[in-house]
Length: 452
Image (cartoon, rainbow, N blue to C red):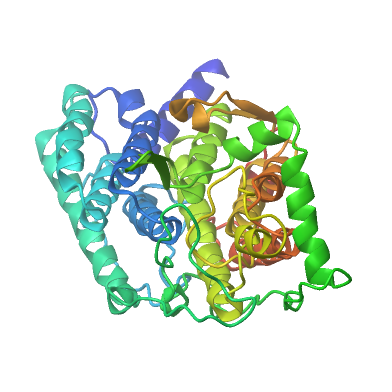
């Protein structure tokens, strides 16, 4: 029995590396750590390039979809996303009867797309040889190596052709016209930056029927009379900000995720770079995959599904942001309550409603829960690189709830933007996992691969 089990294990492992040749270190070829390292590198490049949250989500989505599509031919129980994502079709196929190392192809596709969609391609160029050398050092046959790299290239090229048709180019260089109507968004201190991505609603969704499919409830009417609902919402932000506990300050800072924070020192203004909200959740996806000891395929599946939920979450959220164009608490409080008040966090340069972190965090949590279960405890070390201690969570939903309420503690959102944003994110996440089927089994991923 033991011998039979060992033979079966070897067979499955060889199948998992999708044709990687004998006389190689099969465990190295199928080790997902190299994918986790590559995803982290892409995050670092986007932090360096100061990508806005919506744009960063687009990069993650296309790069991780490319990784998934180059890997999936080596895993018979999984299926392509072609025909499931909008306008994704006719992807290249591997040559029948030929050996491939699909993990290598997956990395090649991921890094090719990541390089193309970021500014600092030289940083990817410096990193790539280290990735591929691992496969050479593991003894991968040269013909298989070259064939796998070529297949990854072909997938990457096709994904970029698909990306080029999503409306992104048409939104470049278009600026938002600020209106002085009461209750409408105005640029905020300290840099009074232009509004970010005012035409993001024109980007083609990945799964959603349209950008307005899950349009949130209309926010309360702007009204600064003390008896109005809006004024009460403003006062909640003001009073909360004036009485923050140490823990609330820690929570707000942990989930800040503002890619470009401006600082004033005398007459000098400078900026610090941070991870985006989507980047934070991509790192949580990595944490979950590692803790669950997910193999290469499930790790890539996780990145792809979370990336899609994040990308569609931003498209949905940004659609409402520029429809309601809601004024930020800082502006209202300075104009009507306390001219010297400042929020704990720097107000990001786009309209207030709904809360982007509430939308995308909830959507990501829904997706991760479908893959790893509801009782998945983990330590989130994402912000350690930015000088903050790890935080412990008993579930992805708990983390999403904390991310959402952090926006009230930070003084940058009214409560309805948070609660209605969570509802919108739940709808987006539910829709994504209901529409995308990565497994050929009729069972959902949560039923197939739940972590006990």
